[in-house]
Length: 171
Image (tube, rainbow, N blue to C red):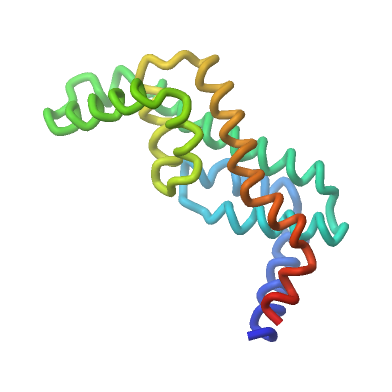
């Protein structure tokens, strides 16, 4: 198990070194909208590298938080762009689902946005649904910024503070 873990770490280190920070940034941004890329692993690994002084921890945290925030916001703007087109004459089933989504958002408000970061699938579709609704841009942007900080912290901080401990756990 230890040798396998070290091989995975070596592979990820090469990936990060070859990919560089802009590539990881765009993987985090577009992963929210285009594909469910495992951003949690990227964030934890960047935190481990920061703990090992391979990259600056503050810069790494800002990059991962900003990328998450931008990716989530892209979903909102996609929803705004399709607001009048896709849902102009929705089917009865789609209309019911949208109404249920809007009711849940009305009931839970901004908490729904923050919680959605932690639910795979929801973080991909909720911003689009919010974009088709009546939520103001300012409310969305402020709440999603808080959500991106909380979500990124949930993965970055353990990765950073456990740092070298990860290798001792798996070796």
